[in-house]
Length: 487
Image 1 (cartoon, one colour):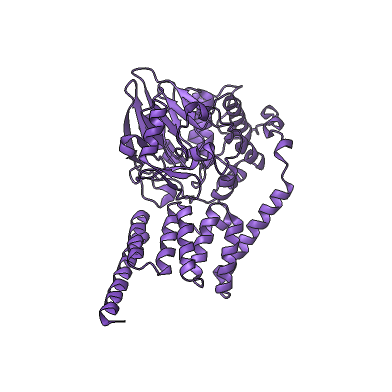
Image 2: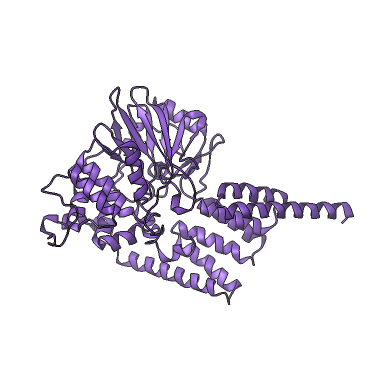
């Protein structure tokens, strides 16, 4: 090799290492998007360094971009098949998606490469246990056609309330504002609601949701307003702050919470019972959309299932899973604003009538309209691309524009993604992401936001807010043990 080429290679290597060092600093500061940009620059200078690809995979994982993480980790493995961190990063991303069998294969490779690494041994054992548990659950599961509603086996009237119980009580069949206020105060003081009343709220809500369509039309009269909130993710004290800032839900102050009420944060039971109670109190004061985390597979991994078992009972796990399948998939405000948790579709020409016709009473499928409503994300470039999450797809401004034109709509509002200011306006102003869990997972440093629409013009007024203190219970406190090893 001529000396000039050797010098150029050496300069490139030095530049790439500088970029990696900057990326590592950004990562340590929890600026994961910035870290991804810097790792990308390092990769552009030197595409054959497995470390850069594995590091970028780790940053993608922190942003829940598991599809991108798997792609990057796979590239690291292709460059160096003996690089254990490539398998480790890919295994962690598979795990976060609930793909335990694929994760197990990668952790077996880590163990093979690093036979004396105690951490690799521990994670492999945990993964093996998770796969065995899944196999056992599959073996004892009842076929869909033979399943009965767990709700039919519950009569809350037969559940006694112990004399020493001093918390909120529902008198008779009606959920009142006084009850909801006392329940929220109890929750703030880390007291539990009696199971009798928790059953009553969830069962009443189930009856209400069974009668709802998959696409709900909301009418906001002229001179009135309507508030849309994004993901709350079990951050109960931040939910209370939203109500402090914007008022309690009522017929004159209605809300739509746009999915992902639970998981990650460790006060998901408090969040879900509060939202459900407001809906029972006044159906037109509270609207609820399904998110991708209102599903068995997510709840099993990210904490809600464990939290429900700890604070309520195993039967509630089944009941919540059933009620989540009743949640509507999308809402339209005044025939102009389309609100959905995830995003748009892999095909053009989807009409609102098709969304309304979706049979939603099931666990989310891995493809099709329902999956895309819950999982998809916008992208800045035109057209469509693969999902950075590994589920759904990415859709461009042209896709948004066509969908709005086809359905005579003005705006798409969606959630599903952390944003630094709690919101982001994209696609030529035709799409707004709103996310209402500030300092997500106690580590992202983001603000939360909500959107107030005033009728008749429905101009979005976006309010950002910061996180408030909460009791010293860490996020993911009830999550799958194995997943906590990686968070």
